[in-house]
Image (cartoon, rainbow, N blue to C red; front, side, top):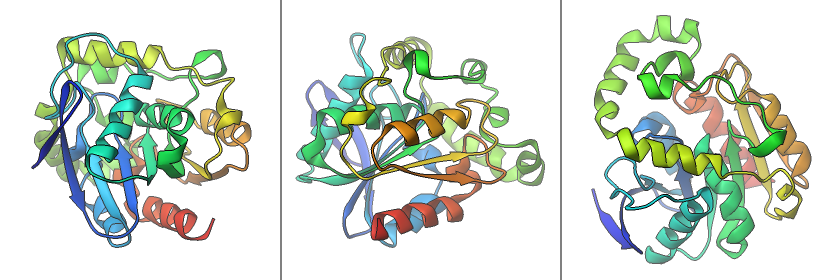
Length: 253
């Protein structure tokens, strides 16, 4: 898989499909492998899908110093420029959705449409659940409903075996957590001008659905879609419903 040098980073990325560019920004600790295969493949039937590993995750080089979510948004914008992509749709989930908010605020000319998945505005206007599983490695209960885990245990075990070694650990994970702590768009969301879709699972224990309701209300003209019986990892558990909602928004809104 290719890498490209952006500033002080060697960013690991993957491109599939053709059409309008669609950049996918992953959440805390995870690599591009954690999108699974079904969801990106569905999107790649319609779009040029760009996946990449954030700094301090996956096969992108580690940072040598603390950083902010705003700087992570700069990484994403610089990646697009390095790939000669002047403008793209952007989907960010969880911490990736926080990064995407700063992308929208600081790089509006590079943004077509914005999709914010299972994320929050940060600051005092947000309510977070228990994310200790990211530290202990007990990820399945954070990402999926008990019913989904029970009916897909072998597939989920296989996915974790393939992805876990690329998750952020140690100081890298601490730096990403510190970056999340710098995120606060509570009073800036009204400045987002891109057409926006906010999407969440109705059973998300990590970033509860009320955070998406706040985003959808605060961003001018934003639409909201809620995936039924879905937890934080709805891109993996409900790839068809998620892709359908995204494609409908990108093609018709």
